[in-house]
Length: 226
Image (cartoon, rainbow, N blue to C red):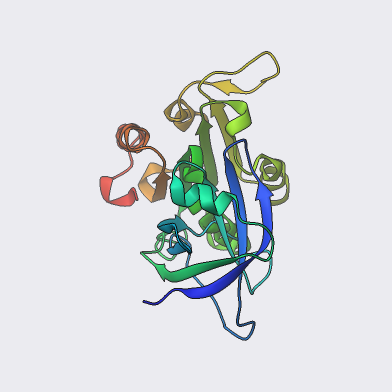
């Protein structure tokens, strides 16, 4: 339970208040690994500790990736870390997304805001074993266009892997050519077999609740929604 020392290997700005840290163990011989859906406890020395989902895939096998929103003292301290600076890490902890159960089924991934970060490793795991799954859909909503995470990867997911990617924002300006509205409005714009489907949801509580209700109305059983 004692935090292990890691150092910031890479820092990527995702939006005005969200960033990704690639963390490498100080002991380069340490083997690391995780299952999609798990999180780590990140400790900034002299400030405190916060749970952060692992947002891989890892750019290198020796790094953990964490996508973090700057919303409090600890996350602000993490945001201020420079390349090479040290952070404590405990984990991974938590349960995995039901990737094994999803084999042979259609998969619908619904994400709101920063909720795409913990689902991203699951999506990449699905894509790395694409032949084992049916239709895969990613439905992603954010407040504004500039808040969308990993938007540079959307076209790759569509084109290279042939998955259905639908993105919406609550309010768009004149430059936004996509969907406007809450993410639940996208559910009926993709094809999936509700009798043979798994759904994974992550985002604000109200978004998850209404997404689950909409999926049930579309024919999905409640125990197939995670």
